[in-house]
Length: 103
Image (cartoon, rainbow, N blue to C red; front, side):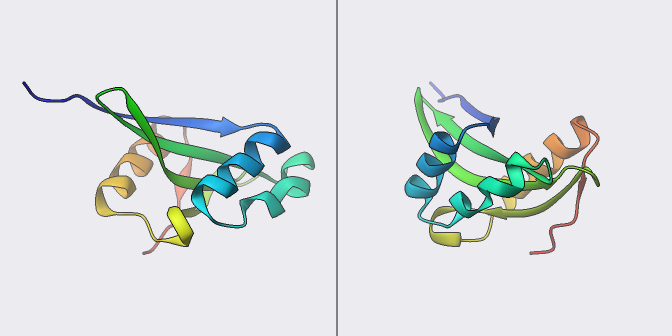
């Protein structure tokens, strides 16, 4: 029986959630708190759920005014995989966002 793979993208809305994302992913996303508060950017977390075991895979930065994805990083600032980029570009298209990632 094949395991179902589900990707999910959720906006990070609180400083506590932002801190948790940074700790789990081992990167500096917490430093974006003031930009989020001013509405300049929004930060999103891409998770992968395989067999009921969700795992954070990417943290995504969106420039709100331009409606553009400008950055996506995984654990310890790793670049997205090809599969993650496909998922991200699909999400961008579904949400009228441009994606200027060139990895």
